[in-house]
Length: 367
Image (tube, rainbow, N blue to C red; front, side, top):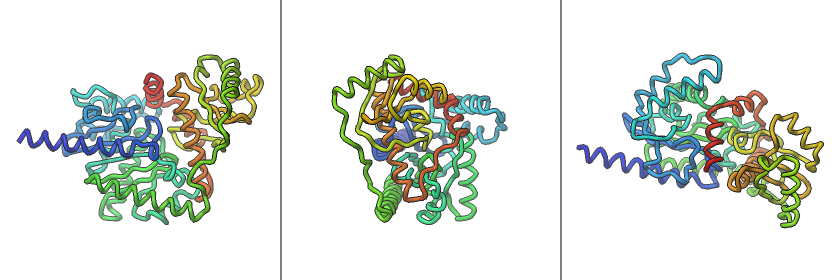
């Protein structure tokens, strides 16, 4: 009996690893975003915080007691955000089983709320063109009437409890839990009892949205200008280091001009590239004004010479530029559904001050 149980767990983990690798590709995610999980009656295996889906192995997943996680649903948390998230973090860590060494994804309580065996949460630009659009909710009701739409909610405990309540309400209305949950300015969650069902639902969503973009005459690729010359990149790198210091511009990654999004479209974009890029020629006066107004050094520079991503490592600078292109593509797609809805200042401030995202930034910086 024990060997049969162990074999079932191995098959479960092999399946979620396969799904993680498939949906951890650049078409669906950038950086350490998104998360996956699998469960049986007793245990939830969830992606560790800050790791990439593409790199997961069976032993990577954090095993958590579902009964212990369920205790989190019954607490009355503090109203102050930092105190609330600290309490939730402690309760989550108490649910981690002894053989697991990593910190679980902050969305573990959300994953635990679904009855389905597998949960795959991603942020594809194709889908975020709708979830980050002004008319996203209305479009979702029209195109995906069986899905659940959640207006923007701060990630973490607040989002987990909101989704949990909405899952229950949906089950009462429809007689079953939703297979798909669209999160405004965030991404999509797809659940299923079989891996193939996850694939089928994702394929249907992506194909339907491709059709909508094509009908709206929106290009499926981001248009970029010519790559800056090596001499231009060298000159810009030297100038940016002089203006921002070696710490803020240790590495500079360049690309041709494209229409950079003026504000944040998802929490991941804030984590990796901050809320706002710098536009125009980077002079001492202009950069100083930007830093004073925003409270941080720019990570994305959009000027006549091209678009530049700045980071503490080559990997980090490359990821910053990738996220800038990702958010630009999301804004391009959102044109089909009433234009982009940037995250509000309050929403930005929560992400900037959230300990969970500070931890995720550190994991990326150290990797």
